[in-house]
Length: 151
Image 1 (cartoon, one colour):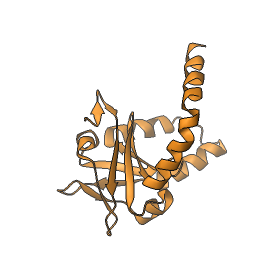
Image 2 (cartoon, rainbow, N blue to C red):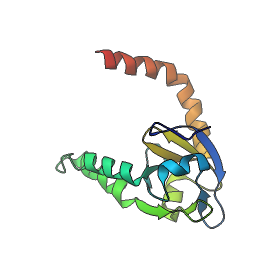
Image 3 (cartoon, helix red, strand yellow):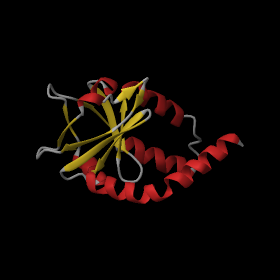
Image 4 (cartoon, helix red, strand yellow):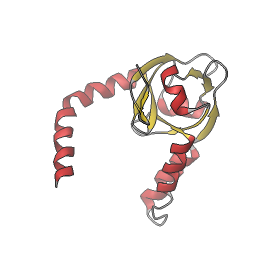
């Protein structure tokens, strides 16, 4: 199963965090992320992972937001202050800083998910809870999103 199709990250992959805070990037996602990528605080208590090119794109977009708006300042402070550039070792492992592990509740079992232009890292427990909530709203959300796109 490919982790990236036509530039889009796809799939769900389970991996365990080791005692040193290292995590193996699923082999199907490695080519899309590259050896060096950026990890930062995400939303819903997960981590966002961007290939360097994707990081440049999102930071370019964020730079157009008005810094005079309080919500912009709050979001960009949290987003950028949590960001770290990481490089994988020969086994495809990288270290997640302890502050990001605490933020995302990562202890042992994790889930990588492909989400279009980024990868997300979730604690297995939080991902299962999110999926349980989302499954009941998935159809309604789809209907609403597609209705809005036609308006």
